Length: 344
Image 1 (cartoon, rainbow, N blue to C red):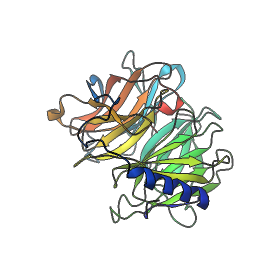
Image 2: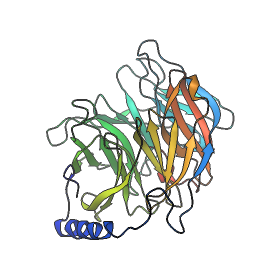
Image 3: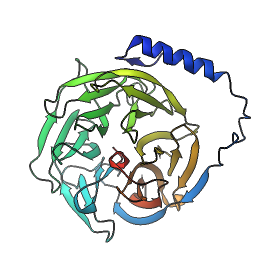
Image 4: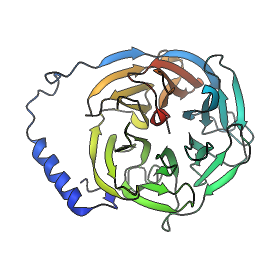
């Protein structure tokens, strides 16, 4: 177990898992720069420009598209994190025609993610600065507040969402991504989709960001922004306790940082990057299997932070942002989209 990770955990299971991991860690003989026998060299793919969605806002000097998620009739929903009061904060895009519609705005929120609930079909958004979880209909009507306030006495900076099969929310609390930047003080939080009761599953995490269930809902991937690490967790049957947890993938990202994540039907994990316009794809064993690059980066696009794959297809979309505005790019996913393919 990493010393920076504190969990609500079953102790014996954690110790056994750690001992096994340590034992296996010393057995590798593969040269570090050569693929192991039977492992293919990672592929490379260049994404295609779909459309520009936003421009840099004069009031905030930024635009940052996030939270791509597919809703009714195959429309793609996005949030603009840095949209000023009154500007579109939730947008709906028809991927076939490029038609873009404003779904919702307000005067205070800074939404960082969006997901449709399997329980009630509403769109749920995390307000990073306000520390709240809100929901609306797919048309932007009937706004409701699900959760507000501190969790166990500590304010929350909710970043990304993953829903379990029952409609409960798993939220990354990115505390520590601001003050001080490198101090591990983030958390993983479970919020009951009906009662809004909050439970801390893990704490002392280095700025947790992306979150995605595995294709079979038997595991959970969590990206850690200030550690450039992706942890793998297994939850108990209640979904409110962690059985085991370990660092699953260490990302050599240089000046860039891991951001949001999505999973396809084959179990591949797609990881967006901040400060580099690219998406990294790993298989369930942590092997890098593909890199998706964004063309035209000299034109002011600096980050590709989030991904969504349309359910039942391999049509994938990346939200890309920078001085040139907020854009959507497309690429071919390695596996078909499922519920966990929506990018938190």
